[in-house]
Image 1 (tube, rainbow, N blue to C red):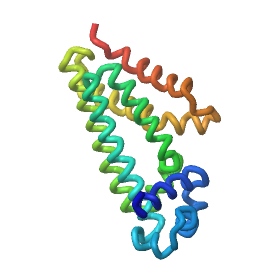
Image 2 (cartoon, helix red, strand yellow):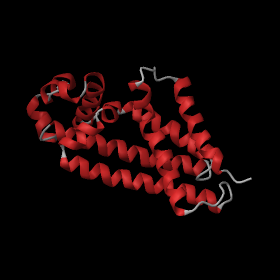
Image 3 (cartoon, rainbow, N blue to C red):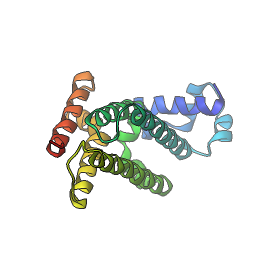
Length: 194
């Protein structure tokens, strides 16, 4: 494994276990088995590492979403359920980011700007999938306002389901993840074509 990848993987693991506030670049270097100077050769500071992990998370999500759309027609319940399951997998892999999202983006203007770009892109992908589902007859026709609201409902449940479980004191497991899929189904059933 390349040193840069080793630093990112070590940081991700430590951030998940302890939170970003309690992990320093020295902790990361020590756990990665490298010198602090070697870490600083690749990343100027902890914020750079967090930004790099966000880019990694984003790229992974886009690639995995494309794989789902190759197997299931966009906007169908199957594609939404598969997308939901895929997103929960990488949300758990990068759970520190989801847990600390507000604080991380409020304290780093560069990360905040990038997060907003990515969030808009992801909303656009969901919007397009739902529109395609309407065009293909899976969903009934929706006016623009309803389409926008449905897009946000789907994204909110998908993006924050793990946070909802953890804040509520629930264990993240197959049953609680299935409940999130059921919630999406419950949202979408009102819009299915006859």
